[in-house]
Length: 307
Picture (cartoon, rainbow, N blue to C red):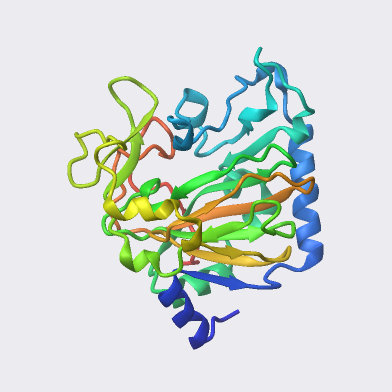
């Protein structure tokens, strides 16, 4: 598949491009079946019961289980799936927030839609010379408890110099305003200058945000927030990206986006992976490394293009 000149122009203008019917419905069905299969392999007796938390709650996930997930299949829970005594109140398959981050490495079904000539061609058309895949994950907005995701850009979490992050977001179920579809500030990738990045905290353990240009200086969201970030909270700035199952949404690394809580009784499954340019600098400060204890830039990230 080749992108049309209009599609490329729309992506460059808006920082986001929706491609309907990218996946056949039988493929979508098989991927949702694979998610159920992954649930069946979950062993609650060997799991640290890690909750996926974001900075909207004043902190971000950063425990050992999270940091060692880059080339594994790890499971992360919705915080609201637990009661006050940290006991699950729902079945596991109604409690998981995310499964990742090495699905494209270890799961043949998700690998097949990540590493292929079609994805490679799209990357080439968008200017990538040697695209590498990383951070592949199933993201689930569980009915009634699927937490909101605060405004952010993907480049904050997968930082390269220069910025080369590109998100591939596949809708595996219909995504609507009611069940927490993506919301974007169209064109924000051109207006937003990256000021902070998400890194490992080598002193205290876990993760933290630091200044892009001063990585030894911690980011204080109460003091250092960008003037423009105040406007990120205004709902009027956002456009809902409502898409049917099978759609692909391309997301520029600097595009500001978020999603609301899923208060409906309909789940919202999605598969997401990101691409970086191989010759961009991906340093050992980034939280995701493959393997987790031996940083080596993009050398260990999976090549998409065939050589």
